[in-house]
Length: 136
Image (cartoon, rainbow, N blue to C red; front, top):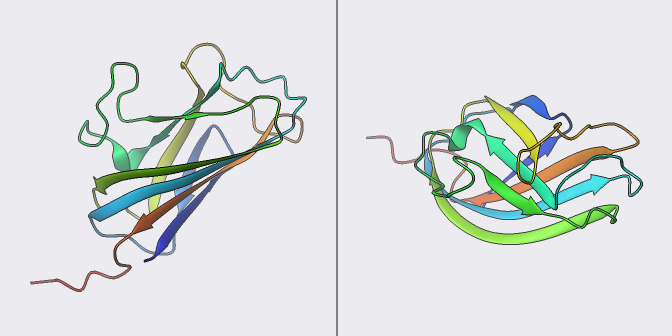
């Protein structure tokens, strides 16, 4: 199974892939949050992540986050490695898409990415096939 790896290094960033990925079953497997433990960011317990290819209200139903998912972290740890097994059907993922990072409850300032705060967020998704073989 192919893996989609996304490294986020800004609180609002356009990610560029080398190809489109057609609509299919996706499994969110892992989030790795790397930060300076002495960070002055206020995360309120974690991060809320928005990926533009998961928009439209079709993948996430929540009373607090629309089209976003939350990643709980220990703010005092340099590396938070969180494992998931969230299965969903993604729409086509274009070569370029938007990512946005907020603190856990989306209140106050957005997290800062720099050497003294949040360094990066890695997301790993597993999916069925790299190429679209069923083209009728």
